[in-house]
Image 1 (cartoon, rainbow, N blue to C red):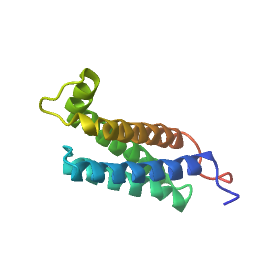
Image 2 (image 1 turned 30 degrees about the vertical axis):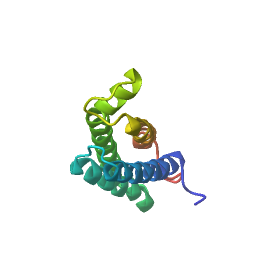
Image 3 (image 1 turned 90 degrees about the horizontal axis):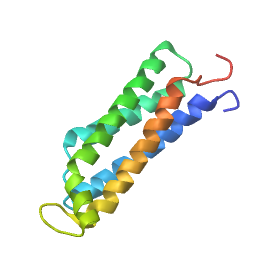
Image 4 (image 1 turned 120 degrees about the vertical axis):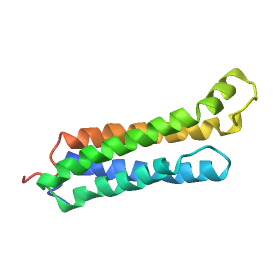
Length: 132
């Protein structure tokens, strides 16, 4: 672990945040929130892509990092797109077609995914080990 660099730790933290977002997304879906299954699959694939940093500095790990960013971004946009009614109704204090009581979960998912996107993006441009 002494030979690991910032990019490695950024990938690991991005994977952990994506795992947390996945758990919140599944809980959100079980409480009646609208979640397209592709968003869940994208988060699972992003976790696998970010976990590829454990293999060290390889030519293909740069591509898996980029794919991880794209997949987390897709899930982020689905969370905001599908939860817009929850957020709008929570802000306006009305109840029409959404579930305003789930707006906090939308905020949580969006925050976790945005942090994961930023860390995964930083990992794309930094080395994964100090010796490479």
